[in-house]
Picture (cartoon, rainbow, N blue to C red):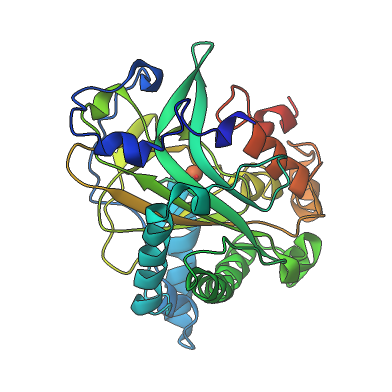
Length: 346
Ligand SMILES: O=C(O)CCC(=O)C(=O)O
Ligand SMILES: [Fe+2]
């Protein structure tokens, strides 16, 4: 399983980056890359407190912001979401502690794609050869069944609470999306079995890099699931593609960066596209991101909403069981044509 392999000499990127004489990026990390992005002062913002407000005007405004963000960018900055700042800081800190563990305590080598906890460094395919990525990671399935690395000890409770609170936010956002798509009340919840929604926690660790333009943290990709939530330690690095151009995502402290993912594109029959994004690295500071991928229930066979297919006259995507989609993606990540492309009906 390539994506979880440690470096050939057993090093993590974290350790490699700490070698005092490292002046250049080893050739295995070379990724033809133009990591420059533009700034946008018009990144969409959704105010969660307005979405759940009793004031009808406020709620309509928030629904409109949400619809526009999903249609135009596939990305928004979520503010006033109610998840405590202390919890967000705690999950970043505890995730950082994970990467500081001795190697034998943080190694979760995946024997198969369905292992619920995985860690390592990553690889990608570039011009027919494998390259290494400038990032270490840990991932675990946290809902409907909860798994977590054993150490650091406090990680379990923190991840569990963060995923639970995020689920309430997720359900409200999906409720808003369902209204925006003019779906029958409850039909999205039922079809995708959202009470048992799948959540995957991932922490990405990007140490400073001597030549950031020659390598990449995570190459351009889209995510599985419905909506991805991302928070970070204040060091920028996430870029999203919009109208063919790459944009930096700057976000106020305590906000959550949300992007639309493959299963929202499938379920909405192509109305809301899964946004392409990437993580770039820098010379100065360690960056950590904590990602929650939020999808339908693992066993649901996802296809476009029946109501939308009726409206559109045809389905634009074929069906696939969600957990199979996740696990093929985890084993062939960044390997050419993704599942989404394969499911598109011409
Ligand atoms: O670290 C980031 O900003 C991006 C992470 C990401 O895209 C992912 O884990 O799928
Ligand atoms: Fe991603």
